[in-house]
Length: 248
Image (cartoon, rainbow, N blue to C red):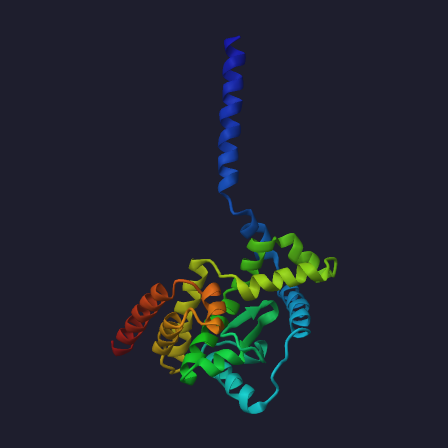
């Protein structure tokens, strides 16, 4: 009887230990996100952009679009990124926002362009979004929010338009994890320094948004980019650090 008791006790302990180890493994990261190929990312981008562009007006005026394209080219060329791989879209929307989609799509609202006092402020936001693209943050965010299986089914056209719209809302209207947001901010500073742009303007832009956070046009940005004061703090620290290294 004692042998049976100890055998059962051993099995329970062993099972509990295995379960604990299993629960600590990030299976979605190990077998999910890492298996999403560039081809799948591109297909997701096509699905999302087709749905989004059907409801929005893309600006074609070269006087508005070309300066944005030029910023992207400068940031990319100095950071070993193929500018031609970034699909830039300027959209007629008064909300102050810019965001990345799968398929390396970068969307900039005219509201953001009009709100900025200097081109370097816009460049800071663009650098931030390019950092999200280069770091694969968009798919990580979607995988966490709506599930990898749904993402895969979207590429096959097996899911209806309502699910696509909900997924789009996740991209345009919800925040990244703080760790991903911070990573994008710090990379943006590096990108701007490499491109000989003043990264301080990224912090300046965030400070200005924080002061006007209750206006309707700014509320969208605040909802998707929280903790502006904390972001300003560590961006400025990163800028100081980068400048100190340049002087050495």
